[in-house]
Length: 276
Image 1: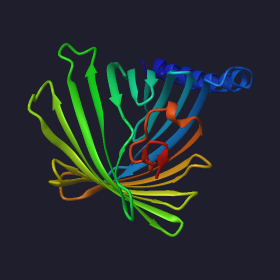
Image 2: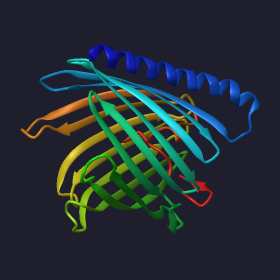
Image 3: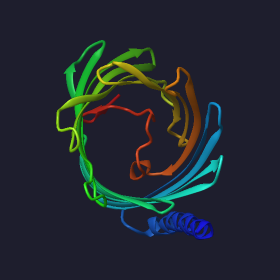
Image 4: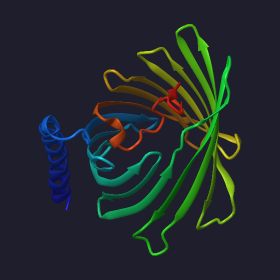
């Protein structure tokens, strides 16, 4: 059984590399709507027991349709491979995707719809004030009673220019309802501060449970868009009064929007054709 899992993950890694390599050749002679992406990431967690993982992701996009695949391997304290893939249809700020993953003998299949319209310019000045909302609907497909959930995430962001540097503090809520608990509730909230110095984006995100009720995580990330490098550092409560830390890094090549979103990665907020 273990040997077959290793063979499977090896085939998946080769398939990702083949897709990325083939796309490079195709992109030279194909239309503009063909694109590709590749990402390699790894990290480790620490507290009383050290654990680590490596992940390779590849994606190819043809106009509004993209196909992504990934192979992840936990290397400490034992080796456990996970395979997955995602088929996604995107149209402007709407997307519909189906994803599948396999961990040992367990297979998960889910369907997700996401809406991320452009933010609204609430006040233009110093600072500028921007507001918006995103929505995600997700349901499991293989379970007998698949869990479904709808989450609305309103946010409010300020844009503060300091010379050539732009600071964007932001607060957001996650208001959700699911098939198990059908009452509408605030499942999480967060405060994010992003510093854009042109060639580097630095973000600091503090996540809370409920409406800023209890601290649940701290993520500090540094992104260098020109070279596709992002470095993360995380701190998470372990439930017994202490914390678990995580350090990780990722390298992206190609059109990174084709790949699954990296949690905590700093980015820009756009309103119309203007992005901050």
